[in-house]
Image (cartoon, rainbow, N blue to C red):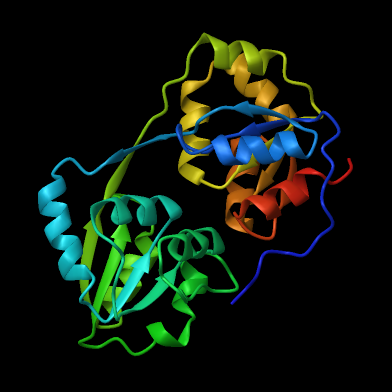
Length: 256
């Protein structure tokens, strides 16, 4: 299992760091940016909402905890699942990435498994997901996304239970967000760990604000997201070791 990279503590030297995490989830990362000498600028790329029928989802969650394998697709999936029920299970618990694994440990799951390559393809390479015919597998997340994971688990014969414990919505951006971006220097870093957030921002921001954002350096959590950022208009892109805050900030603190 990959551990967050052991780099020296980055010094952001007053650099503006744009945080695109969902509204309500960016506070801890903003504090870390300040502690490293940076200036956080919150620009939510999406909002997260709990599943509407909590009682029905709770019942499904209780059944999922009795399955043989449980796959959590994001830290948000862990948080919303844990808000429904304690995550006590005898199942093998898997996480798409280190951020999700960290969230699971915070909620009492002692030894979640996460791949070295922190995406759906990496997860599917784990030995625990090779022989699934007839096995009960719960996939816990939100509607949309992770299509490769869903399709491959079913193709491998899993008795798949897909449970949506939250859903994503477009962010609410206002004049303050736009005005801040219009003043954004090219030396800024933009932290990106979601293709959906990138798409939302591109669709919702006025063209001048989007152009200023793309003039900054994107710090992305995967090669796949680097390709998406390049297609969206970013020209300077750095790929972090993972979506974990420490790795994103380590890459944001590099010179250039």
